[in-house]
Image 1 (cartoon, helix red, strand yellow):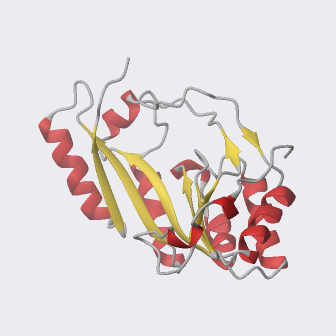
Image 2 (spheres, helix red, strand yellow):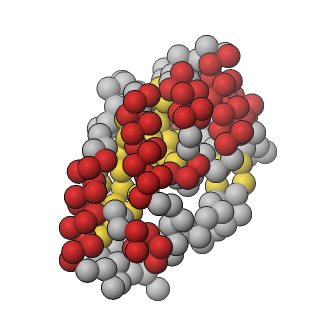
Length: 205
């Protein structure tokens, strides 16, 4: 909270837009850093979760609203790590009647119906889910710590509540077979997210 907000007034902020948004002005925002989970493939090795207070986050949102920005892409590694904190931010948006829309990144096993409903009421229009694979064995190998059943349940809930879902998949893990890749593609079709992103796995030192 001691860090100043980004100096957006120094940027041509009215030139920024998003391909998945119909709002005129949008900005990115980080309310936390770090992720306590241990996925094998992740480039972020900082497991210490540090978060700004909900009050501080709302203060930055209000500053952006004054600039005419009404949509936010929350670029936290995992916005929903601390459920109570993310719910408090959403509830403050509702209580203070901030007329905004926003999207965030979430893990499948940090989302439930209560959270989705409050997010929706607070203006959440899309959630990015890192699903990675539709094969249980690959999910286990990459230490994703989620199940096929959990993925299906959360995607179904997200759709039911009316929030756009964006699903990320990775293909080409070491030892992953062609059959497992095809299984992932078929799984993506089955859960039917609004947007789908397939990435080729690239090894880093």
